[in-house]
Image (tube, rainbow, N blue to C red; front, top):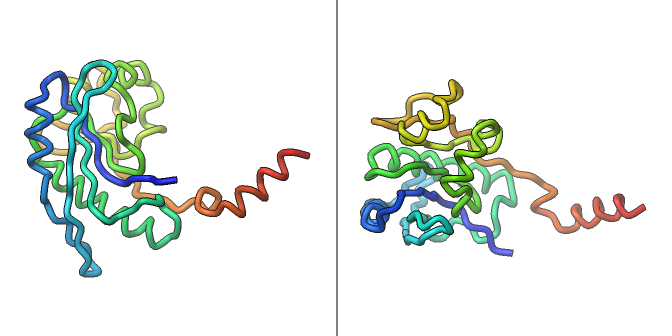
Length: 176
């Protein structure tokens, strides 16, 4: 199974806004402390509510997800760099960095899930009008400009997700 790591941002009803956002990230290079670097590629797409998204994926990062503590560390460092770029990105309504974050919630779903946002989405960045429409939850803090966020917690290695052998052994326990 292929898993992708990157940034997903919902840009509202304007395709031009999503294209501008995508262009900002296109070709950006993320330089890690170990000397490795990853070039960002972006694309845009429309969700079921006709809102436009931009997906940004650093090339060569992960097609298998977080399968060791080392990959969790590398992806956390990449996540921090993506958030740093996001601080000066063109306008968007909300964004999140992580594994499989493409279209993680539509705008309507986000508004409906206001009670559990903090538990589900550490790293979630909201434009102030979206945050205000959620009732200005106190768990958010200043991110940059007119944006707030739930602090990024980094990526975590989960051995059961990474090992099919361990997962199969656990599944056999449940069958008894």
